[in-house]
Structure formats: C-alpha cells, structure tokens
Length: 136
Length: 349
Image 1 (cartoon, rainbow over the protein chains, first blue to last red):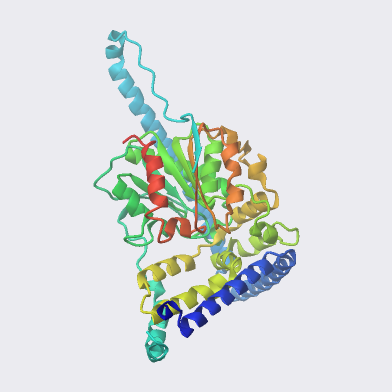
Image 2: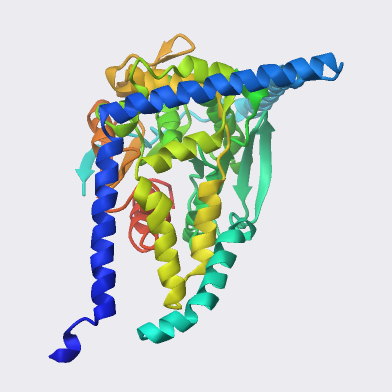
C-alpha cells in the first residue's frame, strides 16, 4: 500500500498545480469584471493617442526631408488596390460572357436533338434541405 | 526520476526549454502541397493536391481574420486538410493574407460579398462541380453564414460552422469592447490596420495565467520529465504568434455590429443595402461548438440553430476550447471523423 502513496515531490507538484489553477480562475474573474473593461478601454485610448503622436511626428520628419512618408505610400497602395478591384471585375465579366457563349453554343448544337426527344426531363433530386434536425 | 536526478538534469532541461521556445519560428507548418488558384488584393485561393477524390462536392475552408488559416493544416500527422484529403475530398482554402494600412478601407462586405462569392466561382470553375461545402471557423464561420444569408443564388450546398460567434450577449469580449468608453472608431482610424499582436494580446488576456504562465510551466515540466513534444508545441506556438493585422474598417464593423449592437442575431445586419436574414439560409447546416470555448462561447452560437431556415440542421457539441476542439490532440479521433461522416452523407460519393 505504501507504494501507492504519492512521493513528497508529487505531492508538492499537485499542491502547486492546484494553487496555480486557483490563481488562474481568480485572474479570469478579475478580467471579466466591468471595472477591468473600463481600465482596458482607458489604456487602449492612451496607447492609441501615443501611437497617433508617434505617427504624426514621423510623418512630419519624412515630409521635411522630402521623402515619401507612410501616408504617401498608403495612398499609392490604395490606388493599386482599386485598380486591382477593377481588373477583377473585368475578369469576372469576361469569364461570365465566355461561359454564356459556351452555353449558347452547346444549346445551339443540341437543339435539333432535343426537338426529336419528346420525353419530359426527369425532376432533379433535391440536393439541399433534407428534412432532418439532430443534435448530439 | 528522483529529486536529485531532476536537479542534475535541470541545466540540460533549461537549455532544451530555451531552444524549443527560441526556435519555434522555424517550425514547419502548413506544408501539405497546394496550388494557387486565384488571387485578389491580399486574398489567395488554394487547392490542395490530391490523387484520390472520392466525393464530388469540394470543400472550401474559410478561417478568421485574426490568425492565419495555417491551423487547418498545422503539421503532418495533425492536419485537418490532410485528413480531408485522405477521406477523399477536394479541398480548397481561402487565405485572407496579411492586410496592411492600404487595406484599411476593406469592410466586412469585401469579404462576404466579394471574396467568398469570387472564391466559390473559382472553385466551381476549377473543380467542375456546381455546388460546394463552405466550412468556416470562428469569424470565418460568421462570414460564411452571412454569405449564405445574403445570397439566395449561392452555390453552397453544405455549411459547416465551427466555434462561430453569432450572439455576443454576455461574452467577455462584449464586456470589454461593447462599452461606450471603448472608442473603436479611434482605434481603427489611427492604425488603419489594427495590429494583429493587439488582438492576440486581448485574446490571451482572457485567460492570463493559462496563456502567459501555465503554457510555459507545462512545457518546462515536460522537458524536465523528458516528455516534451517539440514539434507539437512549436507548431502551435508559431501559429498562435502569427497574427495578421485586422483591416480598420472591417475591425470597426465587426466590433460595432457584432459586439456593440449585436446585429446578426437581431436580424439587423445589413451589407450593401441587403439584410442578412438567417431564415434565408437553406443549406444543410452543421454547427460545431466547444464546451470550454471562451472566445466564442457555446451559448453565443446556439441561437443559429433556431434562426436558420434549413430543414437539415445538425449540432455537435464536444469538449475542448476554441482552437483545441479542431487542432488538439483528440481532434483527429473525435471531431474530424464526426465532421467527415456528416459531410460524407451530403457530398455525393
């Protein structure tokens, strides 16, 4: 029976882990409080304000050195992004027209064959919305 | 190992511990071979290479905006992508990329109304299949749901939502960011693209002791006991630390509409003048929740079960956390087979 008893070291580890878990739970309770949320909001506001000051100062330095600053590069990148958006729309339109053309070509080719076929088409089986709801 | 042996081993263990932590960026993640199918702005659509496709309906994976989608393909032997490929699915991945200040004007509509439909169009073109499965995780789930709610002509047959925030009432995030004193407009305006590190810091702050102390203490213990799994730890640590910026406008809309105004569950979410009506979602829907999810708590996901209009709705509730549910050590034996089984019945074998 003595062999089943945990060693002092195992006992220390167990006690430590229990304490750590309790501290962890306590910390989670602290961060879930309204007051912590308020502190976090204030801290975020301070960090954002400091960041803005830093950005503004850097931009001032760059513009006085007659170098492209953060805003200039961002503006150029946005213009490139907008051009890419337009190209994507053009590409989609080309693909749509190509698909439409292919469909019409196929329809034209199969039109005589369809005219001969008097049988109505079989109803397509439903692929969505099978009637079942479950929870496991 | 007795106390004396443990003490003697400590210097070597310290060296190994430091080595594991310092070299985590060298870990190989997301290594399953894939090809680029389509790109637009920062978004890239990939198709994974496969020699055995048993199911006709392809699967499009969509992840959140706050971490990289590499979690779907974490490491060989523990990769959801690898699992789906082995099961015989044609797998596509939508990667939002790494936005910067130039992408500050991208809002949720960019992802929901432009990128997801375009990706589905490319999936249809490349796979030759008319319909697809859309599998979204976290914010990716919300974006996927919005797409189905807004576009009645979508080609999505099956919609899988993994740990997806729907109703944010009472969540910890809500406590932090829904208050008036949290000025989301100022954050978005100043940063343009909200630094990913900030979002990661907030996520970790939800369980501060676990994330900032217990993780490292456990690793130390494992190293000391000679049981450290270097590859598993490093892969996850590398993924966790890889946080792309959140485009300013999308961040502002996400926080305001989802947390401050809780629009989605109230039926008031509008994108491009169209209302996202969840009752218009008629796809086969699988909702997977995690019992210990503190980022998207189960209670915040469950309302979707009653709100979608689909006649085929399945809910899987499994133990685990927000990420551990799908990427933890038990995922391969428990959650992934459940998802594959559900998909198998709806993917035309």
